[in-house]
Image (cartoon, rainbow, N blue to C red; front, side):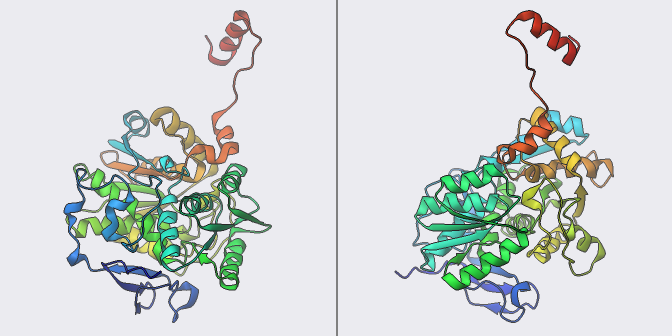
Length: 415
């Protein structure tokens, strides 16, 4: 069956050489090879921003269908993706010493991850291009989101994960019916093997590092932030950074909403990398080409030593006059505790690294106390229960009597 093309998409543009290509089943620039990441281009002059009203459109990512590269002939997955809540976290703001702090909790998506935004667009493109099978490589969240969305639309999914992928995430893949390939190697090796397998077996490649359409799903978080916060746009939006697609997409979404007149100014972006996985941070401040690195961090979803979308990410951070910062695993664990106990949001290490970065940026006076910030939490804490246990501490274990309780409380809490 032939599907009509997305009506407002004008083509694809290489982020390196600027060459443009017609919309189609294209991944990277033929001139620049795998480094030639493509960006979807739109005719913004034909897009009416009046659709962005709460009373007019569904409260999910498909309210932005005019800004998404999806054929209008296709029906999106029935699962609710996007329009995740934004909380005014007053107690956490006071604890950190910032004037106002908002938390956008993307752990509320169907697979408990931000990556559902990308995967929902990915499965639509697979159907549009006539595929029955879709694949990706992931440290966990992209994988579970793809398995979830594939199950919703009836695609077979093949998932390549590195050996370190947390068991709860692997279990999610299996329960959704994905075929899981555990690669005894790094994420980069899993990524390369997935790409080779897609070429050999004719599967659709969902990897957002090289698939230009997946970033468009991720940008919906930026579109939402602009719309949800248009009456109180924060000074900063803080995002964890691994491959670069998430912050690059959010930045693009914010820029588009400014272009369409929904907001008058774009928040500065603060990109947060783990100290054990910081090649983009190094490239950002050196001004040189990115140098791949080894990774060693509990934040598995941002443990990317060879980020494919680093140019897009750095471009969006600089365009917003933003900054980058790194945080240690200990700072991430502390942020897990503080964000849960003072903000009521339970994030996994990669998802909560943004909050750790905000605290450190305030301490270094990168972000000023009189400013406001919105932190994007990209994944639920139950995604990585072992790290959560490190952050949470131990339960009290007592005999079933009041004296034992009193003694335990006295020892633990001084009561």
